[in-house]
Length: 156
Image 1 (cartoon, rainbow, N blue to C red):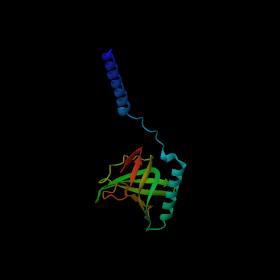
Image 2: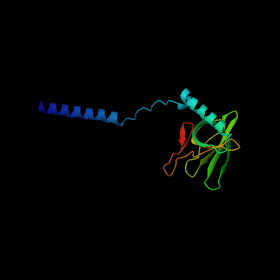
Image 3: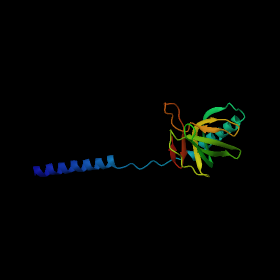
Image 4: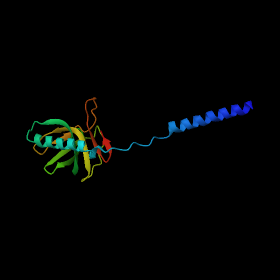
């Protein structure tokens, strides 16, 4: 009788252990993504950034950090002078196209394709051709860096 009680206790403990281990080790279901690109609040922020860039084109000294959303318009050859940069054009609005200069020495190449949506966090510098977005990568010295989101992947 005593042996049956011990056996039942041991089996109960083993069962509880296995149950706990299963719930501890089993992968959690991935969170349901909440696409920030579709929220009206986020879209308003992108529209404000586009307006800020539209206004900044009138000021050749304009320079500021921003997050933009647009469509890859055209892929350009890499700039290999000095730090290597991937270059492509992004259309923000019918009248606004910016050059993106993404540092390949500090971040992975973005597999961008024309016609695809893209979100870019970086520094905008106005120029007579519409402006340049750069600092689209992490800052190796720990300062504020940027990133590019393309097809649900972040490049920084």
